[in-house]
Amino acid sequence: MIQSSIGEPQEELRASLSSQAHLWISDLDVWTRDAIAELLTPDELTRARTLRHPAAQQNYLVGLALVRAVLSHYAELEPSTWTFSASRFGRPEITGPQPIPKLRFNLTHTRGLAACVVTATADCGIDVEELERPLKPLRIAEHSFAPEEFSDLKDRALPELRERFFSYWTLKEAYYKARGSGIPFRLGGARFELTGESGVVFAPADDEETRSENWQFALFRPTPGHVLSVALEPGVENRLELRCFGNSSDGSATAFAQLGLFAERSTETVTA
Ligand SMILES: CC(C)(COP(=O)(O)OP(=O)(O)OC[C@H]1O[C@@H](n2cnc3c(N)ncnc32)[C@H](O)[C@@H]1OP(=O)(O)O)[C@@H](O)C(=O)NCCC(=O)NCCS
Image (cartoon, rainbow, N blue to C red; front, side):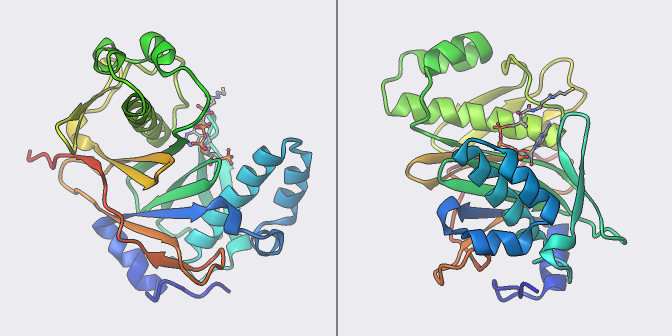
């Protein structure tokens, strides 16, 4: 059984989700094969062997290991006993064991990093991207982002161009992952504005049945090479504080400590 290595009893951690969302960030390389094998189910380990690409296999294994280890910080349950089912668009939700603890999560992984966001009930989404990912930011922005977003990017030079491009990109992906709908081909529907030094302003697409006031966003630079965004839909009345945890210094994959990580950008609190 994983002890709450963050030093907080499971019940208290779970209770804190009434006013908080939790962000768990992990280095991909700290997870040994043995640690992963202890956390995953035999079926998951078999499925991993069918993934040919070593990076895809590592992402899959570490992502699941992180989710299972993290969820067991909130409930007296062995990591391998959690069961999940995926929506039509692939979004996993907890389906057991019964009675199902009031927990939601979303996972993201890329080269070097995996991260997971946990809430009690609010829709939540998360996306991390590597700044050096080989792609042409302006070409993608011109075809897939909102015109205002492309205008904001088009005259910027590297490295600021990439940092801002991936800020928009991760905010959009986190939002669509929170909605659980899958990422639309054109990401220009939902629009973001990066205001001043630390603000984010959001407008959903016209045909998306939601209101901007229901949403909260936060954008982090968890390492110099990664941008990470979190999207939460707690509703107007119940703003959530975001608390961050990361691998603790003892080097083991399942031990976490609270991080002094602050969002570089976030949505302003909206008063109704
Ligand atoms: C899954 C998807 C959101 C991935 O985004 P990505 O940036 O490549 O990957 P990330 O690392 O950020 O996230 C992957 C994790 O998100 C979760 N996820 C999968 N589908 C999801 C969805 N629709 N919404 C939210 N989260 C999802 C899973 O935990 C997944 O982990 P896994 O790949 O280890 O299984 C994107 O590929 C997508 O839009 N898929 C939907 C496909 C779809 O619409 N299918 C229609 C079938 S009818």
